[in-house]
Length: 295
Image 1 (cartoon, rainbow, N blue to C red):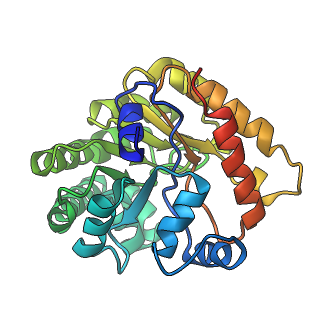
Image 2 (tube, rainbow, N blue to C red):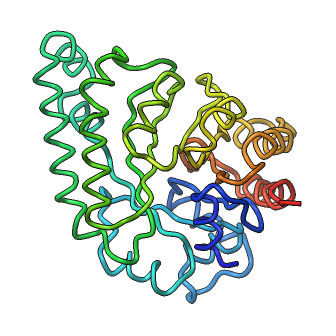
């Protein structure tokens, strides 16, 4: 079973040969530090590909908002490797909030909710048009990142249901009309009260599930594991804390909660960060291999 097949089986809520692993974000500086300290790097294959291979990852995420990816880069990953390729799109809620600034955005949500609803819907329509040239055959799936929550919902859940999820549903449908690909939803924070909306909007997967924000992977798996492929749940604290800070116990807990029956992809909740020690990352790789086996 190759990497792409492994991820597809998980997305289809089946058990592959082992739990697949991948990250929504990997800083270039972290890859460069690994290349300087690990053996096995060279000019060919490219450094990022070798980084993913040495860690045993199965997928990568290309951010549509970054200077890269160009179609050529997407084509390379999709046609020249067996990594599952996700394209990351920033959703309309986040786009409008960034453009207006946090304070003005939240004031406008309270004072002019219909205006903000229209702005979010417009951004999601624009997003589909911008993404269309990148949605080539080489793209295997899409992640829509829209940080609608923190420790709790950033705005009233009723506003999210009425003004955000309808245009997200249209965006998912638009993506599928261009390419029949699985679409995942990512948000930081506590989405416990919004998971029905995630399913109803047509998403096939959920990335994130931040335990420090109250997201209980075991409970989500029990209630939504038959409808969503779950990806994430590892907070960065065990990777950044003191040695022996519970990394192995946390990986074991996550695998025990998420892996049974398939439909699970191991990852951190929001991607790796520059400060992670490469030796700690190597240890994580070994633990994912150890606890991600299907019997």
